[in-house]
Structures are given as structure tokens and as C-alpha cells.
Image 1: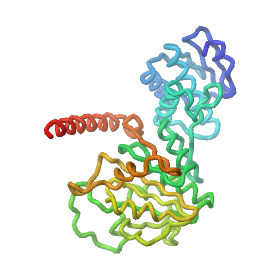
Image 2: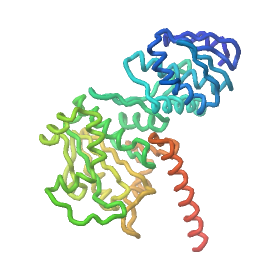
Image 3: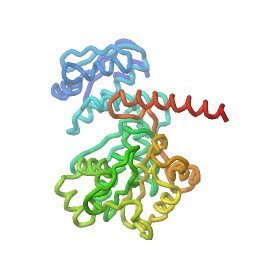
Image 4: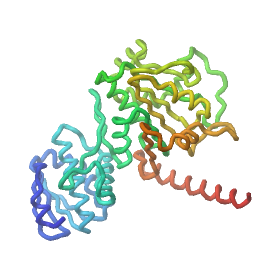
Length: 351
């Protein structure tokens, strides 16, 4: 895209004045939005500079951007998208800027990316409830959210911090609010992560609550707390330990199986065959974090092999670059993956 083209695309109520191929000025008409866009002490622009290796110099409600042609265009797309979000009443946090940068970079890496509209305008998938709207922060999250909307059975696999479980619960809450389903069923195998917790007091719900806490946290994020509590009491939101699901047919429901890497082969087959009419099933897990006893094969790993290519099933694989927690988490995941690869290679040589 040349400088003249940059100057001509302004459906965003920001004005672009081009001086040469690698330098242009973006001017945003709303001063308050421009201030929020740039961030406190211009932290959002500094993040753009750091991630894209460009120069972004603010002046009032304008910002002069210079650097490599590809990188400056990525910065423009990211800023356009974030400004439009502010115009629609949204907020812009540092994590949102990170997400917009990733999507802008992906636009150049993958020209046919479904999240791109004409004129290279970013359009990320989103999940909305009355309480919150979530917008994809990585291309894989975008693909996952679109799969959740389209497919009846979705596998979301990959490392911690990529949003697999959170987005699954958000989609279930959205479907419930729409009236597309009658209930949400949350399930998770009760396997300790390398610890022996011993006897847990209380009724069944109190015993399994510690294992399902991440699912509860996501629910309370997406729905008002009183509605979540009432829905649980009324059975609209059901906590169903995996071992108690045998013999049931789950219809008109969004069913989420979290930490699925800790299911056995028989448990996974039993769970998947519970799918009933007008139901959505979402299976999430990280095959690299199996807590099953040594020698017991993960039901998730086996299911991904057996069901490969089966019509109606969507598999979305997250990687360390999709981690949306602290940036350090992504580096930790990469370090562990590299170490595991070395161990596996040495074991293969010993054999």
C-alpha cells in the first residue's frame, strides 16, 4: 500500500496525511478518544514502537508514524481498529493493544485470513453477553471463536494462558442468553495436579468445586453474580463430575469438558457419546500437562488421533505465541517445550 492509498482510507473518522512511503501522520478527530488510544503517558504508542520497531511520535490528537513500510501499515491498522472500538463505547487496555498488533501482523503473514475485510481493515471475532464483550487477541483465538459459533463439537488444545477455557465458557454464556440452549453443563476430571489432597469434606458440589473454580471464574466474568447463583440453584448451570455423566443424553445444552488431557480413553469416549440434539460440546486441554498415572494414555490425545478428519468436528490448536497472559508466560511455555523435546529425543536414542 503506498502513501496515497493510506491517505484515502478514512472510514474511521481519523484523517491520514501521507508524506512518503514509510512516514505518515494519523489524526483522530475526537481528542478524548485519541488520549485513551495513546494511553497513559503514551504507553500504548510505546508498545507499538517496541513490538513493531517503528517510531510513533504523538502531538495533540495526531501521531506521526515512521519506519519499515510493512510495520508502519501494521501500526495504522492496529490504531484504526482500537480507535473504532473506542467510538463504539469500548475501552482500550494494554492487552487489547497487544491483540491488535498480533492481528495486524497476521494480516500480512496470511493474506486470506478470514478476519480481514477490504482495505486491510481488521475485523476480529467477538463474543458478547450483557455484561461483557470479548474480542479475539490472536489469529488462533479468532479461529477458535468462529469454530465455537459454527461447529457442534470443538476441541481447543494447547498451553495454559491461551484463553481456551475462558472463551468456551463465554460462548456458552452467549448461547444461553440468546436462548439457543436451555442450560450449561460444566465438567472436569477430578485429578490432582501432582498432589494428593486426600478426603474432601462436603456434598458432591463442594467436593468438585475446587476443580471447577476456573470455570466459575469465567462464568462470573460473563454474567452477573446473582444470575449465575440463581442459574446454578435452578439447574440451568449444572456442575457434572465426569464420572457421573454415564448413561445421560445431553440435549439443548452447551457442554464443556475442561482439562480433558486428564481423561482416560474410556472416559473420553463416554463423554463424547453423550452429545444430544441441539447441543454444543467444547473440549479443552493441554496434552503436555497430563496428570494421569504413568502408563495411562490420555483420552484427549487418543481422541485427537481417532477423530482426525471426522465431519462436524473442529480442532483448534493453540501455541505459545497465543498466550494472552503476561508475556513471560509465553516464554516459560517455550522453555519447557524445548526441554521436553530434548528429553524425548534422548529417550528415543536410548531405545
